[in-house]
Image (cartoon, rainbow, N blue to C red; front, side, top):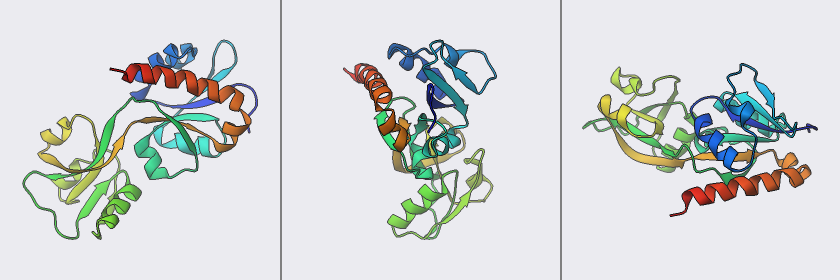
Length: 213
């Protein structure tokens, strides 16, 4: 387990924009988080916190194997990875849903082909419904798959639904609600409890205040 600064893996991309103000209100130094900088590992000024920048899909792996103590990951990624982690806090940002969608007005066959970036989640979802779907892993624009005949359905993250609408696709049903989670390595959560738990409490207080009516 790493010594020195408490390390936290953060996903590159849109979640950072919402994460920085949340962390700032919780009293964390977010200077390194928002710096226009190409370094992938950045320490705060006090040397107490280390930010490690990763692709979103890699965050649970780095946390599970103890390369970093904490991480920020979407529930969709956690459902697909099934990593052995603690999830002490829902940050309440990046809310969306994983959903099944298909061409507007077209009924899927009894044994549908399903294109998705979440093959494990999709397979489990259809299996629980007693449907023996053929799951096709894809990356990139999943919405394209039914338009060109690769699949009958897709399972993907839906935020506003605008992209689906513009491609004549409709949501059929929700697979899971998704939000952004604070995750923790199991060993670090115990060994560095004196650092991690106050941090979780401070962030949790900000999240609760933000969600209060």
